[in-house]
Image (tube, rainbow, N blue to C red; front, top):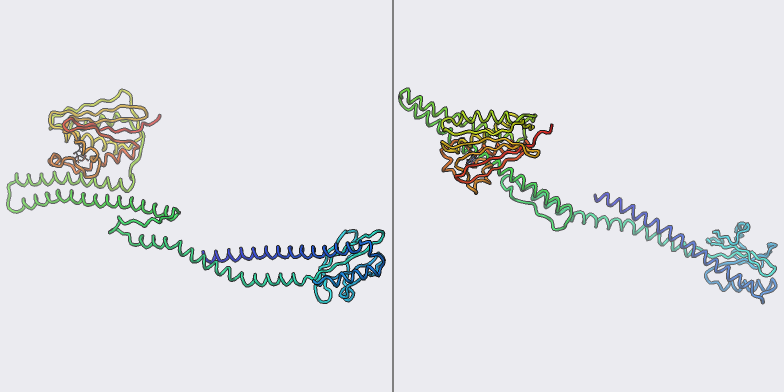
Length: 453
Ligand code: ADP
């Protein structure tokens, strides 16, 4: 950046000095031309004076005038025949080649007279019937010296200016990069151990501030995900430890001494039941891990919801057989089409129905209803069960959350069912909601966008 800055500066200064040089030369030219013009005008006034009559008188006056010019200006005047009325000695000596006026009123040119350079103005002046050709020369040396002096200053100042400006640029870029360095240093310190640390936000409202704010927001998201994963791992290990301990203790106890066949059967039954629950838990954990990794293995196809709801109701009847629950079904006469993954959809409905059965005491009832609204299909699973307290409602869709652990303790489950249910509705572009009060039962409503035919 500094190199580029250096190059741009050098070029800009060069261009600037070049323009100044041109301007200076132009203004010198104008000044010299004006000086010559003034001299021509003085000569014209002299020639036009009525008392200046006769060649000798004119010559004397011109000589006097020439002596009066202190700045080294020269002059020569000739009549129409080319006879010199007056000639400054330098003009006479140098005999410069004089260009032809060719009808032009006035001509300027530069030439050497007596080793020095002069700017010469030529003009024809008519006085009465007489015509004079007048040449007035002004030395350009003082102007050339001024130009040389200016160029010398240019040569000395240009590298110095470029160097100074580059050093300033280097210092400024260093200053502006200092905050980037601070961000880098803090970012290097952030790791798993101190994920809550954030980058220092610069005060200036610039891109760096936006960058740090964006990075901090990204760190917030990473920290939340990381906490979720850590919590998930901790909860999963905790929930897996209990059934594994039950299986192990049951087996150890059974093997400690000789037992009757009934006792062995009991132990094996306990081991089997716990293993089935553990497989279910593992299956759920795996589903959520897959959900976190993206909706892998989910394919949405058009399907008719009524058919699925009926199938789930039939399974609910079997599942609730030992509780004598009344499992009702309410489906519309017309088919309701949605785009869904059949396996995932069945799983979602089973989770809701399974919960309704689990949390409804014997003799209660449960209803699975399907309806179609504007652009949405609605499946409601309601029960007359124990209900959910207000403070728990907002958490029941969280992983591992079980409302009122004391009540849930003797009911199987690890608090993953509703988290999976919500994930499934999400990937179908739908949503899930609950209405419940303790003792008044619960109503779970799943809305899915209908398939437009
Ligand atoms: P669990 O495996 O504990 O059933 P879920 O994620 O399916 O896990 O449900 C989370 C919690 O929500 C349950 O522990 C329970 O307290 C509450 N819950 C879910 N469904 C019902 C319901 N139909 N009636 C009462 N409480 C329910």
